[in-house]
Length: 116
Image 1 (cartoon, one colour):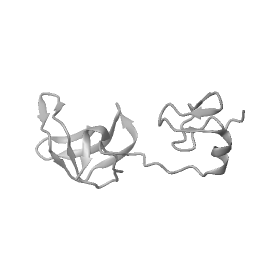
Image 2 (cartoon, rainbow, N blue to C red; image 1 turned 180 degrees about the vertical axis):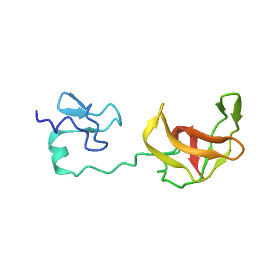
Image 3 (cartoon, rainbow, N blue to C red; image 1 turned 90 degrees about the vertical axis):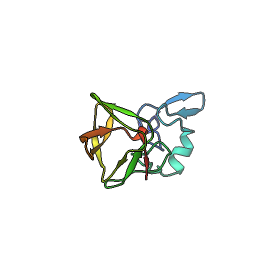
């Protein structure tokens, strides 16, 4: 077993494991055989994906898909957030930095927004 066999060719996760003849990635559930990994180039999977599976980019406009608590305030479902900034280093699991009109600066998770 080489060190490269346990790296997922789809998401580059280092936590892949074998199950018989197959390699399985616990992060993206991709399955492959060692000969498939060397024959196919790694697909570039988008790092930031909204709740519907759409890739997000810096500057996008998103809307929330559920009510969110932020301290004593509640951000209602459907709140539009413009000009998001995606974080390379997530803050407590939050990967979007943004400013909410009337609410100030806030961090959001990709899983609670959809691209507008």
